[in-house]
View 1 (cartoon, rainbow, N blue to C red):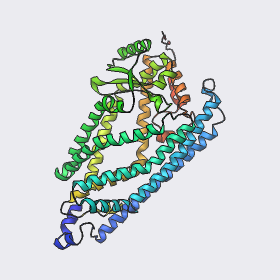
View 2: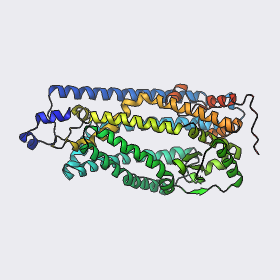
View 3: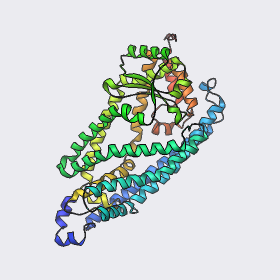
View 4: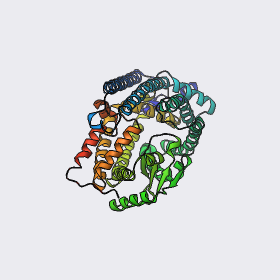
Length: 460
């Protein structure tokens, strides 16, 4: 253990001589080297698999660009299909470039000593204690944000704009960024302070207490987001279409869903993409429609889309996802509780921990290293989440087909696929690995099977 190493090796001479450099035994060196090698191997696997899957996606989409799939031939024009193919390829290529930038930044922060330099600079400025730890986390977040800024700007104002999706001004882009940063600081800094205090003062089970705090925080966000945070970015107005409101309220009554209100969000000021969702918790649930969605779909199609979203709620998909998230976060925090005591965890990722009388000075660094390394070691588990999500999508579609006309949901989906430039011909393996929603043809064919021997619902 890290603490055992410290107790065995510290003494007055050691502490005075160096409070920033770990003394290595041969075993320490080998453990550190082995973890570095393991990290590099998993990073290489991640990069190779992502590049291979993206290459498959690009080739597959381009190979099917010249013709609309037969089942969509009468519904989607060739020009729209080709636009979707081009948009998919452009996004995939941009994803590859972003991947390489992220990998370079990751290596720079870890094995090339970026975090070590940042830690030393912050320690020289603040000395040991909570100011050093909070400062380290804030500095890391600011540097990461500045690195991401050009990529975010390019995606919004070049890639999205090229295909007609961007409706955001440069002023709004930077205003959103500033508001997000301020809100993140106002919410995140107190949470981080509490977690760091628990890590330092609550003993070996700190990770369990931190999990309780984190879980409570997540539930609080479910309550605060729709009423406090979201209105800071978008305008929400009550749905004023009486006919549509009556139709939706009839659907909610049929399925047993109580809502605090029906709202329209001005999503068109940022993007041409459309959506509908419900947010909130308990009696505070709100149904929200993007104005772009209302402008594109007929009332009976909107009802079918909402029935799908309500299916997620009635089938307890949201609750199941929250439970899974809580279970995973508990396991990861327990793992962090072990790793933060291991010298090789720090040194294997390019950082010499602070060997001071108060070892909790390393807690912020442990959090950063864990956040950086975890996605690399868990990447190959990504399909598990995708499989679960696609299963839920099929179940929500079946729920919508039961309570509305499946033809209406099919018609709505076709319009949304066309308007959002979603490819109709994704690579099957790429889709299975990444996609949270089933491919269009699979999803619509499954809905078509619900139409057999079922009378259509009157649109009224």
